[in-house]
Image: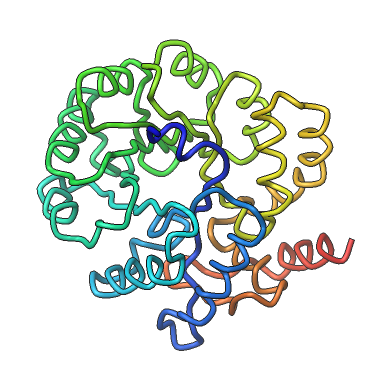
Length: 293
């Protein structure tokens, strides 16, 4: 079974819970993992942006990877996030991190440096050649400052053997449709935009790596499965109540929104590391009101 088949459906970009003193709350992480898996998601992504990875030191990252593997214990596939804008450092990380139990590496497009399309291609080519696991590209121009064009993604898909897919979070359905039309048959294309997943499923996308599925894993993954079966009446019925959730998750910051939901659900403490801060009181009250409703 290829990666496209193994990662079809809903993946969760899991948050990193913290204690009040900002150390990693492994008890809460275990609880969160169990809740996500028991509610039907297909796989988990650790050390994504939603996990506040830029604020974690190397030892914390290694501890989180190993803990996640141990607690999931083969129940679902695990994708590990390893991204950044220092190509040489990323090559070292994909070669040295404990990836034996990972199915793939998710690597965000280089941020801040704003490389050309050729620079993006060469960056991913070297990382893929060095990695012991397949690379899932991650296009998220809202965070990186540079869109990876469909032509660059397709060039990587066709020319670099160890590039197996993309998380497309360009907020651009037209670009997504071009990828879906022209991709190789075994190339995974998943959404990174929770609010666009339903229409993108109609275009033929393979699923999503989601933020919302941290707090609504059952409803969100059921919606995605319905869409993959082209049962859009059911998918719309499941998606409509989540529209307000998508707005609340991203209105100020991710993961401040999702951590507020998880806190109100009793799964984690509402603690984040700077420069990310908690939701403002007014938005947090909307989160509480939604859950009561």
